[in-house]
Image: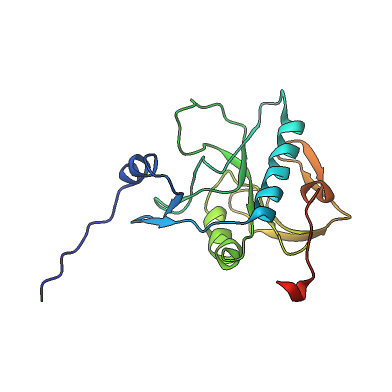
Length: 191
């Protein structure tokens, strides 16, 4: 039996291909990987994050993007976080964000393991990333991974709705309750 071996894609091939797709894909360094869908709660939380960032960063050198701007992680891998902040100027045609400082991933029903394990390692490999925020959707809570330098290990802090998310890398703070504004959490037994 003869099996044809396919060559791994290059980053350039992936970016060209992904730009023409209706669905959303990440790049595992060799092949496109379809991103899973979310739900209304995921979308509402993501929208609240973007609104909070946009309001606080207006007129500042740092800007919020996502989820259509990628982050290059380990090798040629590309992730598309729910929100990211960069303070570097770049052309509007860029598909990969430069100098990303802060990343938000909103945990969906099927993305928890990827967000909490794989992406922790991948975002740690990006020298400019200082803060990675994992945003829960089953209850109001954040896991904040932060570091002071590229070679430093992550330090973890858990925040609840009563806390404030400090983002000194970009000079702002966001009450955690604002991220969950208008978000209803059903009885855990119902999910």
